[in-house]
Length: 452
Image (tube, rainbow, N blue to C red; front, side, top):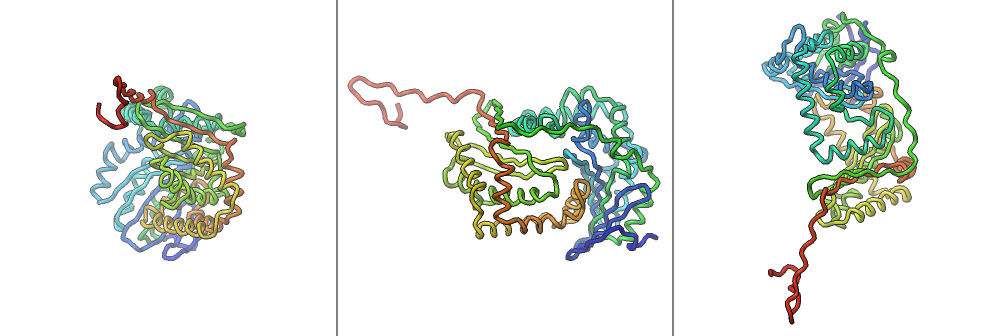
């Protein structure tokens, strides 16, 4: 039986112990031992997402994620969910620009079933034509529902303007024309190129014996061939051209909402700027005392909500700011006040007391994000396929090391006005002006608000 001495690398923090292993076929296995609960999370991560799709394959990563639940040689359609429910667990999957992941959470005396299921659909998911056509209709309906949501339409337009050439410009769900033309043969080829042990990371996290877990991983996965090297399977992607000035886009929507989305091209996962932008996001919109929340929502009442997100990615990320204009407030004033806060961020160092508050919020968020076995498995797996798994444990210390000078300098370099895309979603029809009160002869016009 395999022993822990075979580990390529290990890491221990508090009550969590991680060991890295490699199967003979190249599959990376991360064993995360934590005995706080009698639960085990099993996740299989594939280093493939929307950025790895060719133009005619747009949306295939997400579509294949759906099809992985529609039958394999040992588990017919519906069996995965039925077995998971019978075992008292849960399962799901998700796709991003850079990766696709499948997860199970089960009690610690029955988690091996997840390995059996994952190995079977990795080896030979069925992709039956009838199921393919049926599920394509589901994905197209999901896409249509998203396009019928104003924030989704706005962010898609902003992202497509931010990245003019790189596949990051496309929504993960893809486009209807590509999905309609997609064939079973296309998906089988995509599965062959990317869904194999050499392009996968297995995370087993929770109440486990590492030696036993590694032996089970070998039993289920090691006989599967390694597959096409990622460098051969991954298609060419053009280099994104530097921004030549601020770009502005607009969406018309059939409601009275006025929505603002601003985005900048930013940093790769795990970079120094990635950590700094995490701090900046918390500084700007983390809690009621944050700068934009306080200025736009509480003091000026120009916005009903404001948020930001550091969306670091493998080949360059996005920093997002979203705001919803308050009823009757001026969109121009909202944008101007937001710009004043960004200019202050780039011109002045953050006071020590304010930075301490931000660090406290980041520490609290870290504790929350590592609360369950599934949380930890997700953090480690995502870091493993996008950068390195130790980043899951280093991201907080990296953020806490960010000082006021780094914040100011990062804002100057990356959040400059000439680098951004500004998008507004505005009412399709201007609001009807209130009718002017008629003057009576010899009298005065009724006062505002009086009945006529």
